[in-house]
Length: 216
Image (cartoon, rainbow, N blue to C red; front, side, top):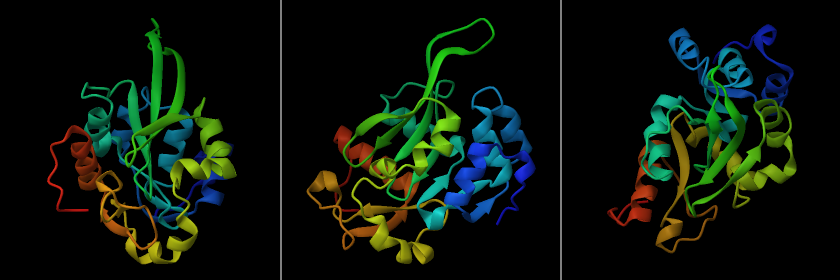
């Protein structure tokens, strides 16, 4: 587990860490911090420094390496390369992807006209804005009871969190067997731990009609 360093965490990051304590984390390489210094806002980089990549809140959330999920997010957003303007940074236990959006025209100083945090539910393709800036997202939006519909869209976490301690290691999420898109019902009984990136790619293939359907 990464050692927390409150001297490097903003107030919003500290609030996030209190509400969703680290479970299984690893330090973020300095090369990653340097590479994303101009692509992600400071609060997210502070979270990387303070907690690292890995699971938080008993597995309810995972701070992810954008490099590992960018291609998947690109696919969900239509297949273009969005690595400069749509950057995945967080995934829920149910596969909901949160990503930082740079919107409007790029300015001469390299910034964009506006920004927000959006999320995508891969089970039904629902997407919406979660917050308008990084501090709001980490320090308020994720702590708001209303946001539970975002990272726990089927209200299953209260019954699954005891199981999750053993089942949700980094890189693992709950999928549903059979998948919701195949007529399955999201429930505690149908929830099964699956490799997150592989399962998200499978759900995307279901949307495009290219998936083999004999798997969760």
